[in-house]
Amino acid sequence: MNISITGRNVELTEPIKAYVHEKLGHLKHSFDYVVDVRVTLQVDKFRHRCEVTIQANNITINGSKETEDMYASIDGTIDKINRQLKRYRAKLRKHQGRLEHRNGKRFAVEHKVLRPAEDDELAEDHQPETIHHEVIHAEPMRVDEAVMRLELGEQNHLLVFSNIETDKINILYRREDGSISCLEPDLG
Image (tube, rainbow, N blue to C red; front, side, top):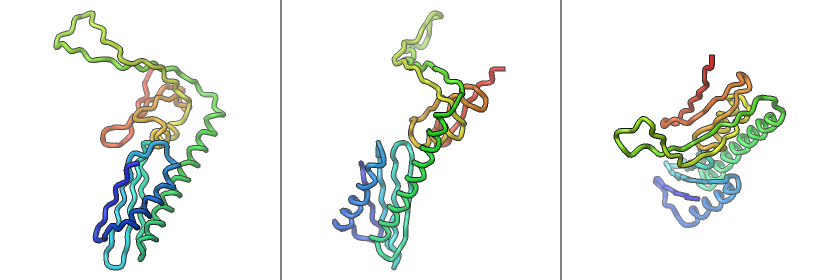
């Protein structure tokens, strides 16, 4: 876990750093892959503010708290993050429970990674080389559930699923600007 602590108008003493590391250590068991944790501690007159941003499992969780004591601000921020995590887990359990009672179509989709041609001119019978091949099983679900799975990090940047409302294959992917696009073929 990569933790960066920044102080604005406050001296980052070893006891404060140790306290932040201790509090964040309790959150570590909640994530499979914690990528980055950014902590900003700021003091303006009598206001002590703590902001924490955690990037893990392809989700970003933010929390902040402002009090008259830095340690109370740190505690309040961690409490907010814990509440957010409980909500995410509850949503995930709720949606997983619904998946077990579905009668939607399941599809198998082949996924191939191809090596691009190195020559500028291609022969008519050129076949690109397959670097990686796998079969993805498209689980039946609604679009909102698929978006939640993509946001919660069950899938990296792409999710293929069977839309139970239309019985068609849909593809969700995360765009470069962070938004999510849904592709649904029109087979009519």
